[in-house]
Image (cartoon, rainbow, N blue to C red):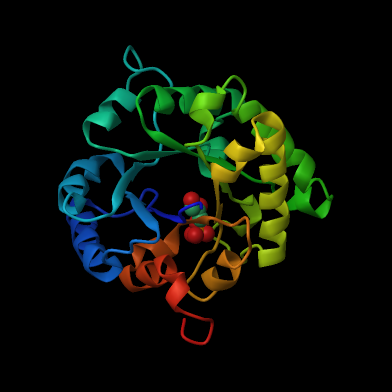
Length: 257
Ligand code: 13P
């Protein structure tokens, strides 16, 4: 029912020529996986060349951020209207690195979600607890508060296309992924909250993807969980073979990874 989604977040890596080279390799390695959706999120400066390389493939283009306004005196920022022009289909909002390094708050991210939807771009809304919050058994409380604040005022008719990315902060870039059980517990909880906020029908359509140290050798077990609908992949997405293997998790098992 929900088509799995795999998004490669390249973060602030790869120059233009490097991004172009990796994109070409990826289009070959990933191929056309009819049963899943795949998108890559290069830096802003590589969006245009990457967009033209993938235009003939089934891969989608994603951006890593956008500003909440469509235009204006915001030196150094990029708007949703500008991204839409480049055929950007998804935009990552509220990544924990932006919260930590650029002081983004749930209120700011909420405005960015609205900006994305206004420009027909699918927001990939990141949330997740810090390590100390998990240790203090506050995970579900933290993600509930984040979800409520992030989706404040987002209307029912726009809600089904939103993607939620559960990215526990302690799992990002550490090599320690959430176990399938841990991911499933949070994803299921988020889906229940979405059911309460919207409806079961809507909640069943919203994709909840997992991010944090996803690799070819752990994606299969994560994807076997009923509420894990794909992955937001950092470092493993910059290796074409790894990322292709992650996107085709269906065809592999642990021993083959
Ligand atoms: P890693 O896959 O490198 O842990 O990064 C996850 C992430 O931040 C994706 O947005």
